[in-house]
Structures are given as structure tokens and as C-alpha cells.
Image (cartoon, rainbow, N blue to C red; front, side, top):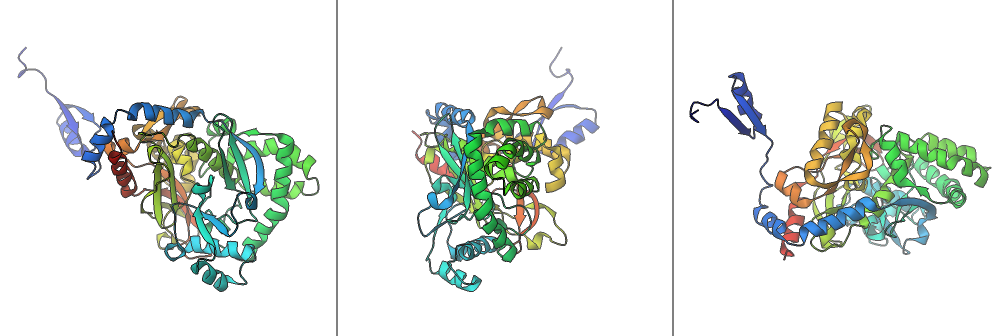
Length: 458
């Protein structure tokens, strides 16, 4: 048969309109999913892809991440970890002058909590004068949700990696609504934090001395199969942790057991902070592999969104934080929203959160969209990651491992950005949470990281 007389078959690339038009004319088509590389990345992408170290470096980095075995080993006061006169915060480095409303609110609240100021005006003046050093949580083996502010009297989850030996910290979760991490600092916020300092922290510290290390990798794996994605849905994981803790809480702190267990039971996000520390210690295990293009941190401070790469040490690459698109509480709307904020994107960096939304169909009731959108989001992340997590599996995808190990080169080559789901903080200090949704990271953070990596390519 002559090629000219054979039935025609058409390969379509790009916009779906062409494919639809041909199919309407009964022409058989083979659609191909293809996207152009991110603008301005062609030379850097070619250099990174040609680096002979890259494949082995990425295999090593992602194997370290996925083989990490995080265990909750204790609860410690931040004063044991922090240098005197220092507050930690979420995201890349930032000054008081550039800090957003919720970040300023949380810092003011911490000043009042620590007795370093008599009122919010004095707190603001002292912070503006630089009397307190502000440092990113990530630079101190820690992570903080939303504003992420940690001051000396706060208590931290301590998580240790039994495989690689690292340790990471995260503050205890206050609950939802008007809380310090969303920039609220009213009397009820400070009263709760003082109770956490006097009762919750010591009770949990004594509890973990009785239980011994708790396997967070195992709890996370179970929670994924019970409908959580471990960023904005932690109901199953919190329940599993509560089961582990409850008997020892009663034994270790009988006088406070009822209020401690009631507090945890009333806060579906209590596990989130432990999950963040587990994700941090896992991604930290993958740091400092020369030639690796794998992302080991994504974090936001309410002004900037930053990323770090395994092959580039502690350097931050940033772009402007975007405003999330999602569902709002009560009468709040997009005009009330602050740009994206918090270290909780460490969950996505480790293969959870937005990358695992297919495991949590109910998440769409919190962040918006349809169940099909959640499944589509997870499937798309396999295109920009290096592996599937061997322990974190998704029942609805045939127990396929979650996509893990974001490769900045694949981000540039496909044009796909990481999927992030997030809470939304009010832009005015003191407002608290106003909603939850999805947010797009800035392209600049990934392109500048790629270009810097290309400069070090062999």
C-alpha cells in the first residue's frame, strides 16, 4: 500500500483545540503532552543535564530522602536550642522592614509572650531597631508553620532520623483560628501559649520519656491510607498519634491528662508540626550532594518564596510569594489574604501535602476544587520528581508511591511548578486565618536556582 493511500494518523501537540477539531472530523489523533521549557532556561538546562555528576548525585540524594526513618524522640523548650536574643521565623531570611502583616503580628506576639515589651507599640519599635536577631528556622534545623515564629519559652517537637542521624525541630500546634502563627497576638492567644508552656510542653516531654521514640514514618504511611495528605488534612494522623500518647499522658501527667488529651483531640492539625519536623529531617539527609539538582527546601515568609537545592548548600533562591486561590472563612475574601507564608511546604518537598492529594479526596472541601483535581495534581507531580516514595503510598493510585524528589531541571524542562496546598493568613496583623487553598510558587525561584547550578556544572 502506498504511504499516500494509507489511513492518516495525526500526532497533536500543545493546545487541545487542534486535537478536538480533528476528532470532530473523524481523524484519528495521538495527543502528546508537551510543554516548552521555562523561558530563559535553555542554556542553563542544557548545562545541568549534561553534567556527568547529575544522575548519580540525584540517585544518592533521593535515596537518602526516602530511606530516612524519622522518630519523635522528645519535646524540648526552645531555649535549649536557640541562641539568646534570637527569634526564628519561617521562610528565607527577612527583615522587619520587609515583613508582612502576619509575620509582624507573630513577632510582636512573641515579644509580649517573652516579656520583652509592655505593649505592641514597644514591641514593634524594638524589633524595628534590630534588638532581636531574626533568623530562618531552616538555618537552625527547624521548621515553623505559617509565620513560624519560635521564641525561647516555646516547646518544640524533637525528631531524629534513625537512618542518617539528623535531628529537626518544630513548634507545637496551637490549633486553628486566631493563633500566633497566623499573626494574632490578642490576650486569648498569649493565654493559650502560656498554658502550652506551663502544662502541655512539660506533659508531652514526660510522656515521651515513657513511650520512647515514636515511628513517624509508619504513622504517616498509615495516615495516607486513611485519607490524609499530611499538610492540610491530618485528622487520621492526629488520631493515630493520640493513641500512641494517651496511656503515657495519663501515667506521666495525671493532673493535666484530661486537658492535654482534650486539647490534642480538639485539634485535627496537631500532627502537622511533627510531620513537618519529620519531613525536614528527611530532606536534610539529602543535602550537600555535589551536582544534585534536587530541591531540599521550599519555604515562604509572607513576602518571598524560597528554594534550596541539594547541590548548592544553604543558598536561597527566591521570588515573590503569591496569594493562594481557595476557600475563605465567613465574610473574608481574596482582598483579606496575605501572600503565601510558612515552612509547611517542607511536606511537599518530601512527597506529601499537595503531592499526595490523590490520597485525600476530602481535602477539596478545605482547599477547593473537585476530587478529580486532587488526583490530577498528584499525577502531574510524577513529571517533575525523581522517584516514588517506597513507604508513602496512595491506595487510589493502586498503592503507587507518592512523587518525591523535586528536580529543578525537570521543573524547567516541563514548565510544571510544584503543587502546594496551604492555609491562608489575613494580611492585617492580628487577623488570624482567613481560608485555605492552592498556591503557585514563583517561577523565578526555580530558574535562578537552575542558573546557579549550571554555573557549577562540570
